[in-house]
Image (cartoon, rainbow, N blue to C red; front, top):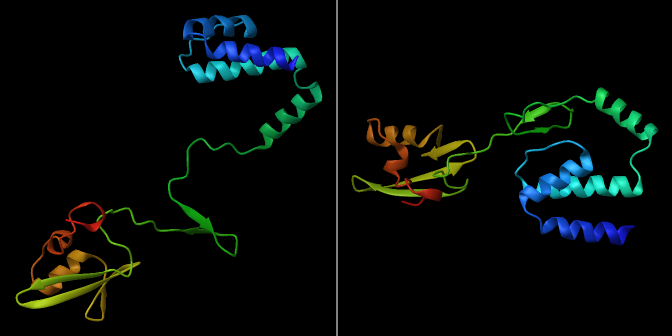
Length: 163
């Protein structure tokens, strides 16, 4: 039996979408308008194997139905990345999404009005002269005295923190 199924699956892979739909109609006794070749091949091969070697027992079907009924079904993916802490409670994990921000530990250097300015990138903010600021714009405001874009001020307008 196994050799025959293998040959049939190899033949399925050479069929066109229209031929696969016809084969699907034949083995499932119902029409399908799917255009996904890989999906059709997998479904037809599964059905052919089930017909040739036997399907699930009634007991197995009842058990699967019972498990599915008890399961909580997620209808949408989680909105934020998270982790479970030691207490079993969910812990939010902050993921830096701005590609312009260099990795923590990086020192940003810039000459401004004849002085060298050094800012250290932290996991949660930026350190300048011993003070932690929430954004590069806040650091640039401290340095210049007027609001400006921190990424432009430090030349971090390109991908990965490169101008």
